[in-house]
Each structure stands twice: as C-alpha cells, then as structure tokens.
Image 1 (cartoon, rainbow, N blue to C red):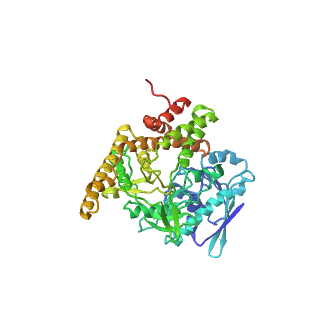
Image 2 (tube, rainbow, N blue to C red; image 1 turned 120 degrees about the vertical axis):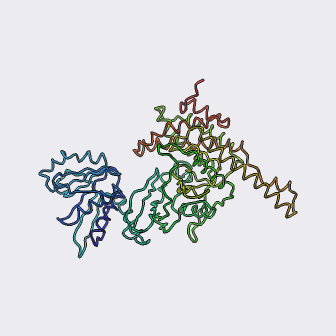
Image 3 (spheres, rainbow, N blue to C red; image 1 turned 30 degrees about the vertical axis):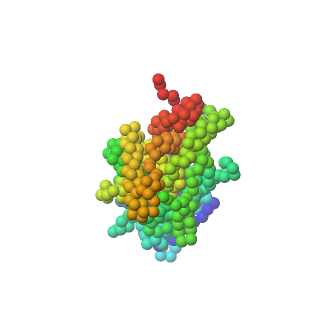
Length: 528
C-alpha cells in the first residue's frame, strides 16, 4: 500500500491536484474522496473531470441529489456522491460495476457504501492544514505510483518556470511514453514528454531481454541526443526547453498539428513526396553512431543488425500466426521462418545504411504549410533511431501503418525519393570532378568515380525486404496489443498491413519468405 502526501495552499492547488490525478488514470480505476464537509472534495472532483474532458469551463454540478453523473470524456468517468445513499446495497442500482467496466469511477462519501466498494480503490483524503489543506493519497502501488509520477511532472513544470500551468492529454502511443499540452496565459503552448525508463522484461534469447535485442531506446537520453544530431543537420525537430533526464521528463517545442491527411482522412500525395525528399536529403549525409545527450553523457546509436531484424519479424509467428491459424507456431514453422528471413537478410549485405528514424510515418511528422523547403516537415519521434538500411524509413513512409496508402501514392512517394537521390548523386559527382580539376591532385575521372552513384536496383531490393520485415513485425505487434494488452482497436489496422505485406512480397529477393507465408496461410496466394 503506497502513500503520498501533498500540500494544497489554496483552491487552485486543489483543482490542479484533480487534474494531475486525471493525467494518471486508466480504465478501471476507482477513486474515493474522503473529507469533512467543505474539505474540497467537489473542487478536486471538478478539476479531475474537467481535465479528463479537456475543458476547463465544463459544467460539473455536484450529484448530491442525483447520486451519480456520467461524463463522456477521454476516459469515461462517472461521478458518485453517496452522501444521501440510504443503504449500501443501493450502490448496485447506481451501476457502479458498469462504471468501472466503462472507464473510471469517482466517489465522494465512500464510507456510505459500507463494504460494497472495491478494496483496491485509490483513496484521496482531504483535511485542513493551517491556511490550506493537505491531501493524503493511498492505494495500490501501481495506481499510486502512476499518480506519484504525475505529481513529479507537476514539480518539474514548477521548477521549469511553468508554475500553475494547465495540462491536457495530447497523445499516448503503443509504448509507455505519453505527451501532454502545457499551457499558461500569454505564452506559447509547450509539449510535455513523459518517457519513463524502459522496463526491459525477462530474457528471451541469449540471456537478453527482447528490448535489448531489438535495440529499443532505454531512456530519454536517446531523444535528446538524436534531436541534437538532426537539428545540427538542418532537420526540424522540437527545441528542448527543459529536461529531467533521470526521471524522463522533457518540456519541448510544440511544432503544431498539421496533418498529412485531407478532411476525409485520405493521404495527401504532395506531402508524402515532400517527406520522401527530406529522407533523401538526410540519406546523403554521413551520420555518426554516437551523440551527446548531456555534458559527459554520450548516447550510442545502435546498429539495426540481424538479431534485431529477426526478433522483430518473429512477432509475426509469435502472435499473428496463432491469431489467423488458430494454432501456435510449431518448431518447423519457427525453423522455416528463420531460414526464409535469413536468406532475405543476407541480401542486405553491402546495401546503403544511414540514420534510421524507425517510425517515419504520418503520425510522427507535422506538416507546416507556412514554412518552406524541408522546414515544412517537423519530425517528432526519433528516440529509437538506429544505424541501418536507408530504405527502411522510405518503406515506413510509403507504407504508412496508420493510413491506407494506395499503390499510386506509394509509387509517387518512392519515386520522389529516388529522383532526389539521383539528382544529388549527379550533383555530388560534378562537384567532386570540379574539386579535382581545381586541386589537380587526381584526374577528373578518378574523382567522379569516388562519388558512388545511387543504385536504384539495390535500393528497390532493400525497400522490399525492409517493407516486408517492418509490416510483418507490425502484424504481430497489433495482435499482441489486442491479446496481451487489451487494446482491440489496433486490430482494425490488420487488413491494411496485410496488403502492404502482399505488395512487398512480389520482389524476387523475398521468394523464400513469400513461399513460407503462402504455405503457412499467413498471406493468401494471389488468384490466378
């Protein structure tokens, strides 16, 4: 049983505490508010509900007479006031269990319910303390730990010059990271990045956890270090205004909300082409494999090696194969899968490598129409960057996991990248030739040959292999998010990802992978 204590000097602090608790809530949480009349329970409840709603002016009446009031917020919340409850068994008629199943339950006067409330509720007790109040929060370690982290974010904001700022949920992703918009009157909004240190989990192979083999970033140091590399290279990434690297908090620039989609949710071809040209610009540069996250703290950018590629792809047979076939993968399945992919990975030897963003697709790129050139594209997700095949990020963009990309826009995106690379290759060779003539140190022919031309055939092969590997991984991840993590909404993306896999398997380099997928029923064979 964890316990927290918070001083609340005034009513605004009580309201903010409600918002800070709201930032930590998950489906199924139950919060009990205890305290005498006038202790601030309703004030805290209003702050919590308004924060979940993202509306500081939302009307939140006290449900003293109705006993319960429901709100359709980011996480649905039902506000119970049991002061007038005649008997504990009346709680059943109010639908308390249904409220927990649907979202969050917030309960004032929980003592009126007797023993009918869950024993694992979070209890927030408010009491007078001098001119203000004190809040004592106790409950299960997990839930109180989440609230404690949210309160640490509040302390970080106070230390960073954002005392009293309002916080509103911006987005969370499939990882433990989350983001909030932080606001103060008269100041531009900032983004709060909450990136706890990665929990590595048990060893799965060669005494190493999955995250170590897959080369996942383990702390926020990676974001800071790669941001510096990208910014120095002329790529638009968020400026970092303040950070607590030990806790994993960053206060960063809000690059805006411009989308790659039109009003109907369809991809805008020109924006994908612009992003492809930005990748071409980035891939013309030689990137180091390490960067400074803080004075004396260096982040090593790992390679996207065979072990990382394979263990990612294996998510397909670990999770997706049982999902579509109704049986676990056999030893023969695992062996056949690894043999087929090993043959494909062999073909990557000698292919061009670069700095890989790893998730270079529309949710992580902000379109800024008021800017020009590459500055129109703000890149916000790169903490998992690796050194690996340059074609990977092109496949990530052109086969966008969150948007259905028709074949013609995929082709236009790839063509925009290739055209930019070919043009840069010609320019580099001409520059090398001119430099050699001026220096008179080598012949023009020798200098021109030193600038290797862009190899379209090698790129196409790497693009197909990386596109198939990435989308095989995603099929496994989306099923895992449903089966293990209780997030069924990810399953709606499966038809799109299956189609992407089919597109990539047409390349001759993937013949063995294609045969395995057809043989095991992972992908249907095309009808003749």
